[in-house]
Amino acid sequence: MTVAMPPEIAMIALLEPILLLAGLILIVTGLLLYGVRTQDWRSLRVFWRPTVAFQAREYFLYKLGITVMVIGLFARLYNHLGFA
Image 1 (cartoon, rainbow, N blue to C red):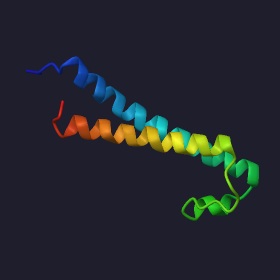
Image 2: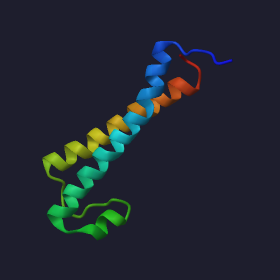
Image 3: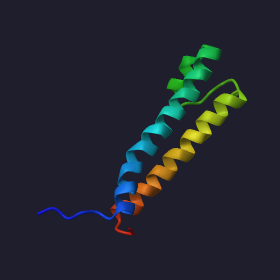
């Protein structure tokens, strides 16, 4: 016998992986744009420590990706710790 989830819990369960994946894609996109522009791939391998400053677009995508991933983590905590 299966128990139906309330719609808001089902929505949070659906948003978790979407937010985490979207955040990861945004972070990787920002870092790839930096790498293509500077050809400084070694600094990205060494704990993502760029030696040249990010451009505004790269920085925006990187920080947006981190923000989206943090929201996804909060959704995961909310869903799995039983607050819903």
